[in-house]
Image: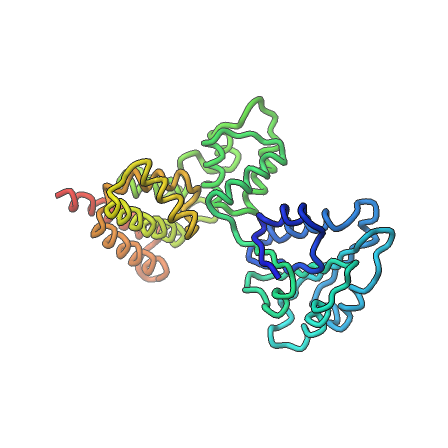
Length: 352
């Protein structure tokens, strides 16, 4: 049976009738709820929805009762839906899932069974291989932007491009936080698209003072700004020294790829940015924020970072990460300050 990313589920449901069984898994709970909603809206008729929808938890349902629950005929409708949550409690080698496996080999044509895995573990192959599986993982880059655009449009919120980018940066791409912020923005009564300062004031993080902005300042060798942002970021909810260093380390690895590509193919500027976006970001999907700004940034700063400097920078970031995870060396602000100064000094040494 096919495994689909959530982005392909709407098209699949539009093109054909719902599958006999779905297996929804992954670490992003909001996306699991969205996948379930899409299936229910397609499979059930609004007027008889309450009569033809049953929801169970695998924690309470006797596994042997599942086939009987699925065998009930729909009432005044073409099909019914059975939702089974928390299926992770059925251990992969447990006999508890055998009735479900046997049912999935010969499912009822009038019933759509939707199994939802509550945790972020890999799917159970015995169950997933017999279903249309929907993977719900945190979107990044263009996928995250598309997800946010859909939510903004659904709430009737218009923002300028800089405000949209700041919203992603300020929330770190967390779907739960983004959902809450979009709901808050929808309550504003303003004329025209919201600007970046308005969005920043409502989110509580000023425009230009996000973790991605700190990373950008480091890569641009704007040491003064990077140092200024350290204490402000550490006061922000959800921001830690480890999170900042991890984000910087990921970008350094992407920059190393960009530098090697630039040298190998003798390209730069817009040509290099396009190659970064299509060959690295769209393929590996690293967590570097929005892909278009990230690709442009890497192409702009690549000349500042020869490969030996990048190797030294990666080592310094690793040392900082180890120090941040130790409770005996220094505080977060001190470690991050030292890291920024070391990386800034490495630019001077390279220039010399």
